[in-house]
Image (cartoon, rainbow, N blue to C red):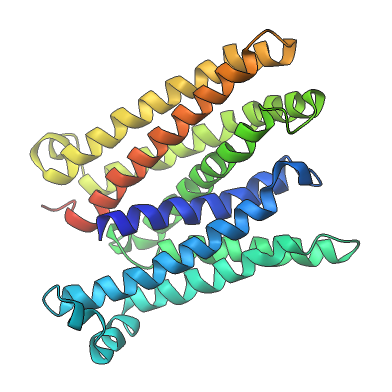
Length: 283
């Protein structure tokens, strides 16, 4: 269940983040393969959503294959908050296919559909988990801000990795990489503020960070995030400027660094899945 949750988070964030990245920085840049990435990630997320449905039913029935396929147990999950989450997420993931509509005036229809899909997927994340506690409106709002920032960052990694290679003209790639750095400064600030607010509201102080399993796991996540921020800072202040100047091997160093960011993101999402499936802020 933890692995399925982590994989769903990753694919859903790549899909929604790809739409946000394309909307903010790369509209019309078909060479970066954003549409294909969004659609592929969306279908993977749909498959993982179905797998999570089966796993939830199996968990209710004693962790057996027969329970995972039991129509009654599947119906119980579907009628719960998990079912509402699945409906919202699946609807949003299907609407993300609007990115494929990219000709003439119809592209604005595609833009509207894909943005609506992003909103529905994000709302799906607010249906279950620890942020459904009180004050729900504040926890849910902070979670949505956090999701926007995280999705934009995660969704940017693959197109930025491609741009640092030979597939995109250097002038175009340098412009978008620099623009991403400027936008990312704002999104990182939002991410940190939202994360700090969520952590404080869920744990209620400093002591639970050391005294509870949830707090200790959250500290591991914070440490990984700090490493990620350090790597991102190196990209912004050293590697991207070197790439813009056309220094030798700058593209290779930047691609390796972006790949390192991606690996750290996967670790962070795995720890996040542990937080949401195996621990509680109150335990």
